[in-house]
Length: 82
Figure 1: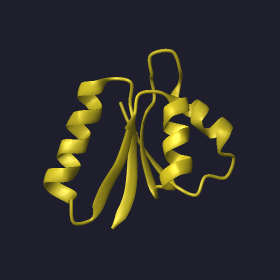
Figure 2: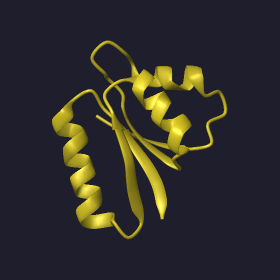
Figure 3: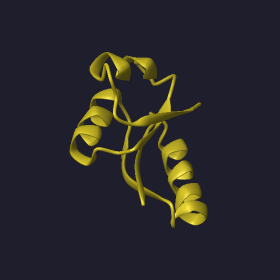
């Protein structure tokens, strides 16, 4: 099972993506957490060590690329969602 998290500031986008994954990919992907900010996403990454992070590029007060300031050599793949 591939562990993943979702980082998106829009609640409906987070929930919709989680639902799509649950309905269609539940045998391959497991959503361990959802975050609405980079700081919350960092906490989830440190806690769960996901293999995939679904990341929104344009967050309310932040840019998704700022995640890479915290993880110079990330041990996870990123799928940009926008």
